[in-house]
Amino acid sequence: MAKRKRLTPAQPTYLSASDAAPAPASGLLSVGAAPIAQVASDTSAAAALQELSGVLENARARGLMIEELSLDAIDETYLVRDRIVQDEEDMQALMESLRARGQQTPIEVARIEGARGVLTHGLISGWRRLTALRRLYEETSEPEFARIKALVVRPETAADAYLAMVEENEIRVNLSHYERARIAMRALAEGVYPDQRKALLGLFMNVPRAKRSKIASFVTVVQALDAVLRYPTAIPEKLGLGLARAIEEDPAFGDRLAEALRQQRPQSVSEELALLSHELAAQITALNSPAESVSDLSPAPSSARPVASPAPSALPRIRNTEPTTAPGERITLQAAPGVRLGYTADAQKIELTGDGVTAELMAELKAWLATR
Image (cartoon, rainbow, N blue to C red; front, side, top):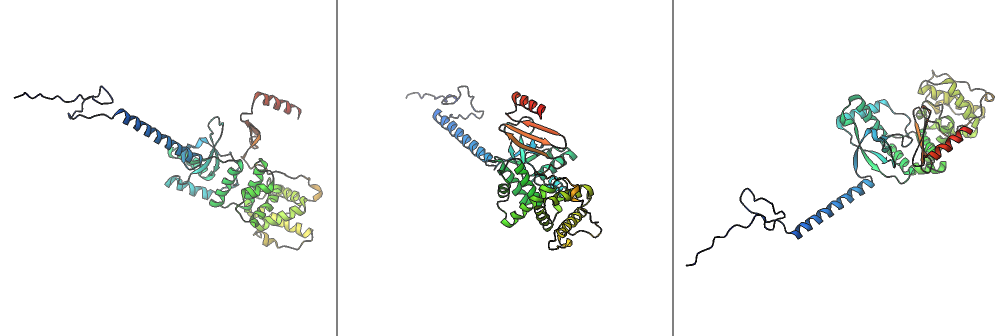
């Protein structure tokens, strides 16, 4: 009878990816993947990773991805803001909501090309949320308020960026006619639009024509009185349209009205509306136009004293062709290819940034300043 031969177990490293792979502690042996299977697995993983990267990049480019940014990275002066005043009660309510529930809706920002320093993203919409979070962080120093959720979008043009800002405020917090007219003039002043008509059409293309016509009328009021009005957003529609008609018919009336506002310096909404209503009524009477009731133009209180108009001959014939800056406001515009200009009137400060700012430009600017 032949003797049976005892078989020995296979080597643990047989067909394994590593020659030094130890045997499992349980004593059971495993066979590694074949090389061709490993290559196929690696190729599949690389393709999946590449596809995922493409999806993420596409989402980021289309503004579909929410990112978390430091508050210090957001430049809120990237666009001239369309809202002039902010109600403190509304701001406190927003702060309490953020404190209790966190930020529910992201802001919109654009990446600043060639940014140097801390400011890397420009604010397009969401100024109230940004301001509220900054105030919360100043009050509490809590890390949760140090960052903000944002959609990083890539507007094709500056006009697209302004339109995004206006449309969000139209939806969330309705703008006054004065604010609408003012942002149109500011966008025009910064060269975003070639003329007033295109500025109004570009920013308010989705509003009815009649409403856009009223905004255009308020442009006249902005041009004449923006530097001296203290409560412009309180001007009711009928009073604003009446002022616009009177200024268009007699530009000197705009000068007289501006001078009256400078001299009287109204300290409340009611005082300023009473002054505007009285001056308009006096102008209508002087021109022998059909009389309009002052009470129809503005709900001015009986305690408001009428203000006498200065004599026309004593007033300078100066017209504001562009809206002036609000206190603390910073204007930014593309001054030339590769050169962006920032101007803050209160700080008496002008900044030039961009690839076009060179030693040659500095020398030319110095020479020009010496001869002006």
